[in-house]
Length: 214
Ligand code: ADP
Ligand code: NI
Image 1 (spheres, rainbow, N blue to C red):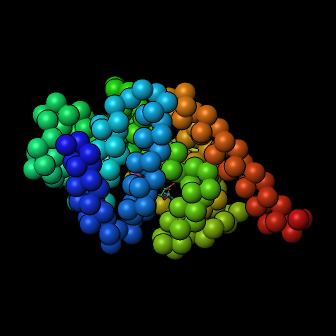
Image 2 (cartoon, helix red, strand yellow):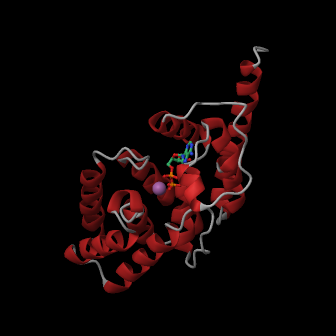
């Protein structure tokens, strides 16, 4: 039963995100789902809720749904249409709506499953994958990979975060290097430490090469 629901949901999301170019492509969802399962195993969280919330977490994103409200409605309708139990629907929707607050202004997740899925989403923004996504996003937005004349922004509003010009390298300082401090679960913290170290090594090498020293 649940197996079938997860399969159907996977297909639903895959179809919806097929032509998505806003950094929320299907393979981001695929990785977050696998990470969430992996963390759920270690943290004794409910697998079904974690997988369903991971699969659906970006459907309610403003960039995809128009408004968050519309997106949440669509997710609810989907879950009802495949006969997911009411208490599960409430839980999954609560995770998705809490997660989608942007710019570090998020509320604390109030269930272990919420913590797991949020950790999985944040992990996908760091490490080798995070570096790849950052450069891909920058290219898509027409940002330079680095410009020493554009200062790193210490604080910013949600609008500045979305709309002001930055660079791929600045994004490391404005977001990526901060993520490991926000991890909820012990296992995700461990994974984040490794991915964080990878970012730092990358930056060190980048600046050596930038100055032609290596
Ligand atoms: P999410 O909402 O899942 O945090 P975003 O839509 O903010 O993701 O970003 C998608 C991907 O692009 C992430 O890997 C993120 O780190 C990266 N990204 C977001 N904003 C920028 C930016 N200004 N410059 C470079 N990369 C960015
Ligand atoms: Ni995401």
